[in-house]
Length: 474
Image 1: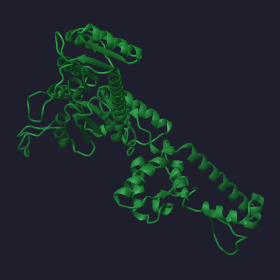
Image 2: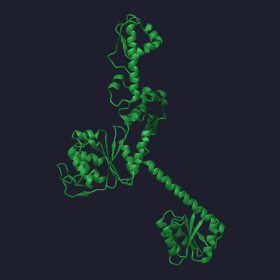
Image 3: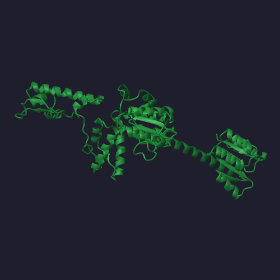
Image 4: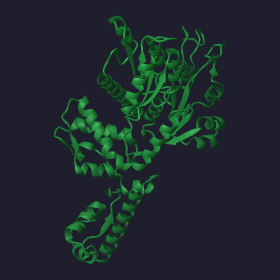
């Protein structure tokens, strides 16, 4: 039920309006003066305020301006028996929904009220849409519907609204900076600057200058005062990428900044106070860095108030098609090429690939494919993906269960084929019968597993050895 406040000093008009609006299903409150109307409007949020222009205490223009100042989305209709163009213009400039001249019929009043309430409803929907857009803006570049990605984005949304220091951990190429940007854009600091700096890309002696700035004459080439990244990020967010590569002596100064929110420029004595949120990221295990005395333990605990682990691409393979489509569309637009799609074989290969470079490698792979591909369909030849060999899978840390299972199956098949060939003295036809496979299949497996003959005297009577090269099992 919509609520309406009627601000009217004449008793008869007040009663008529109350009866009419109540009959139409509205909840109605009344005020007999402008001052009382302003007070009631400050205590309760009404869907509509219907106010006379000429009132004791404060006129209708004052009521309108006070109500709109307290609630810019308030709907106000101004009534008057002294209607002039000047008064109507003034009321509309102050944000009145409409202007109603007495006397008026109830149908005209009802129509105007319905329009005002509908306008308020649309405004409320627009606010919700803007809020939803703001919530999604920061995550617009983060693509993935896998369970693990939903968990990560949920953490991002939860921590974004606070000023808590966040530590993003994950392999190179997983998109840690995108997540840092998302946290910034979803935070109250979104209108402030987002300042990224790669601690691994800048030498120690220059990194301190980049972070904290310097005074003129601080060192030989310092001819003017330089603002550091912390000053530039005032009111916003600073993103310290690859924090694990920061020199341990510089870590002490960073720790002080996190603790006291102050620092001094190089060569300066003035203490500078800052209001900056810190997000850090690392692709290395900082706890191992602590054990090796390469990273300060107190700094680690100051940074990792809210740690978020960004998963590698191999742990979210179901996101590969969506990511690929995004990059295909992106590069087709940039290169002014017609839309393209991945062939089923391409998708299979991409699903089986290990992606050591993660999303960044996927992006580079798609960019290269778009350059090479002239037809509409991207084939495996355009991708140039080298699938892992059996020995690489065996030795590589972090191999997934699917990869390990495929390797184990290949090794079992290869061992059985070698044993049967040995028993039959290399007779492939007889070996195929024992293995219960046809002759062609045996030849394909010999080639696949790199089992080569010592001599090619007879196809059915040769000694077989395992190739010194590790063949691809995929």
